[in-house]
Image (cartoon, rainbow, N blue to C red; front, side, top):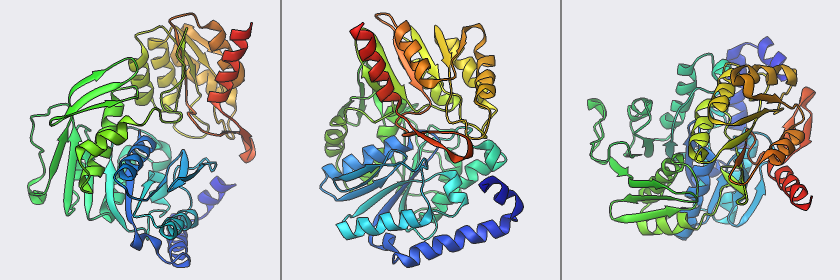
Length: 426
């Protein structure tokens, strides 16, 4: 029904509707962001992890902090899971959340900002103090009608945040974000720690700060890297999490927090729910991850491929980004010894047709099991000592979304744990 309404109503009327709704929400709750330092995090991958890490750093420094991500809503110590199946909620929900943060006495609020949320004006009438860009990869291309439009949606956050900009200098799209003026710029990366930041002449900024990671080591159960004379050890997997950590360190340092405090906060994080989350260590590993685009999926497999991989591959969601289905199947076929392709949020599409499209890329390795629970069971039953079972696509999401808006309660982690116990008890 929503898609039909979007097709029937002219685009300029929809834009006006979204804008006025954003204004109404801000007025109703008294423009709460004016009493907070709001940090917006955008990009394709890692937004939730950056929000979680940044919250820990600010709290370690003694600040009351609120955060809103695809995983959860948190104000101070009180938190609740995000059950909306929306990374960036509606305008009234966001403004109400910010109002509650003010009432609790928070100084900071950290919010995931999505391209579709921006296109629907959900970022409007929020006084963003800081904007963070972590990376950009093809996603939502069909709904945005091209990668350039997708990127431009992300850029709108930076145009609305004029104080501090934090940018991943290693991403090939960094130049577009660097071109937008700000009072203070921070850039991070680690491909070339000796390089100076190259900014367009018209926006040369003497306040630009650089944070580069050196001596990066990816261990079996942690990551090691160094910034200046401070050595970090974080208990997460995947080199991509160094980038996420760097973004959050820049957030901390831009607020006057020391590297030592940043290190102390990050070392306390044992896992991020549904993000390379280890469910079982031995005799074989079982890991749950949110990866749902080709680049993220390949990075996960590269991180884990020291051991033989058995993958449960989601079907990429119905009604969007159909281009990536065969690509993700091909990546799984290249890295994994067993490829089990299953159902994942088909919405109004035929789930078996989606599975078949993914299987086309995986070739002869493809095993098609439509029932996701049965697919996870098959993977765990097949696992031998030394193997790694990697279940991707849903992470910590609490629902499976089907036809006509139907939502089925879901947890990849719980199902994996149940099947592990069943296998052990045999």
